[in-house]
Amino acid sequence: MRFSRLPRAVWARIVEGVGAWTVRQLVREGVPVVAYDIGSDPRRLALILAPDELARVTFVPGDITDLDALDRTLDDQGITNVVHLAALQVPFCRADPPRGALVNVVGTVNLFEAVKRLGITGAPLVYTSSIAVFSDADEDGTSHRLEETAEGHPTTHYGVYKQANEGTARIYALDDGIASIGLRPMTVYGVGRDQGMTSTPTTAIAAAVLGRPYRISFSGTTLYQYAEDVAATLVAASRSSLTGAQVFNLGGSSVAIPEWIAAIEAAVPSAAGSLTAADVTLPFPSDIAHDGLGAIGPVPVTPFREGIAATVAILQDLQAAGRLVGTEQGLPAEEPSPA
Image (tube, rainbow, N blue to C red; front, side, top):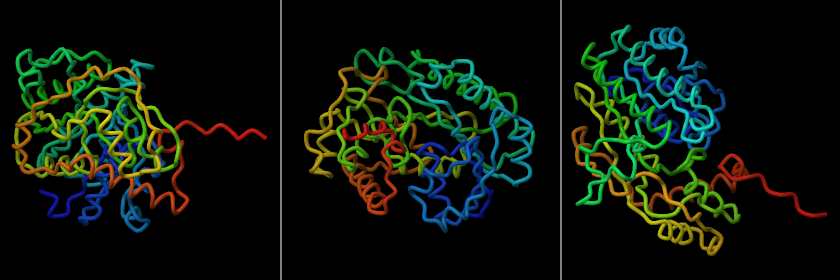
């Protein structure tokens, strides 16, 4: 069964930006969506969905580390398509590796196990892996890009956990015939992206709109993916008929930080001179081969200047409505003005 026949799609986590954008796409297509999340705050969804759209989402509170609860939810809600976005990001895994492994690794095993038990085989289980399964040393010495055949040597707990998830998917395909598609994003940006190692380029956009100075946490060149595009790719993957355990790198726009800042300043001229960047680079490759992604069909790639401009427009609308709060966009609380 496919989305065109109005199945019920479950999202294992919606608190971060990509999940919110994926829910938005499906709601606007008229697809019933069940959001399964340990949190109960829909604020990121409310940034990009109208109240009537938000009302069409079924929210089920639950923890992905609880297999029985996950099993019941998939069964009770009649779920046919699963997109798995539950994860603790790099800083949280570094701060608490056991909790990171429980959520990112055991949680993923639980989801595959629940899908197997319930026989949900009409669509591949789609999940987000990460370019963090590689390090910058994994790029090809001749082409100086990360080839799709590269062997990963992650340098973070998060990357190790994501690498384990790809292995979990492979074994469930071999042992149980569970089809899956893992997507490896790099630096996702857009409204709702406000936490994690690569979130600060988006926070810089919010800072510009709010008229606040801001320092992006890294320099160098990286591959940017607009959250709306990533969401569309996740949906396309769930609608595909691929079998086995597939994993694909995502494409995007390769951009140096000075270009990124210049694009923000072009969209928000009043921000000129207020944005800077730390003198460190990300420990991941920046030139990434992604030809294999064509196996799921055409996917959108929004030019980064257009994606930044679209993000600015949404944030400005929120600001005009009195709903743009700096601390909810990843910015520190403002110091009180001296008396």
